[in-house]
Length: 162
Image 1 (cartoon, rainbow, N blue to C red):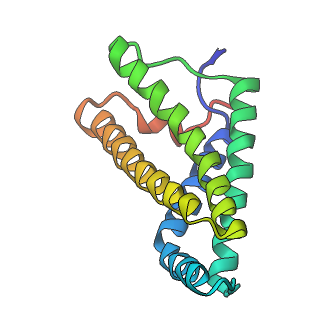
Image 2 (cartoon, rainbow, N blue to C red):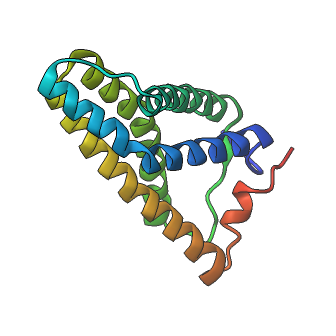
């Protein structure tokens, strides 16, 4: 379903998730250390940083499901008519990967932490690297669209249609 723009709630959720993901990246080191200690000693330590990392991961996953629900219920704006079929496909794949990662990262983190599973920690780290790469790509393309192509790309995510 195509609409004229993103809703106010879709935009708020986008920026809330973006902010939470930044916080997760900034403070992930404490969780990494706690996970390494747990693998060595077999004992989980719930510091404030560990607790916040787990809680924020769960919040991101819940917000991702909310975003998916809104996307299915209300739709998204049609692609920019100036974008090629390849650009549209790349954008769809990228957004799909974002949603997938917003679910798989918390799940892999939960498995790693709750089971003391080093393999799940490795998966979590690989997914984290993939997310970082997607973020850099997403921000770069948005900035190019807004300031080089001047196609109003970023305006769609700050100005709601409702």
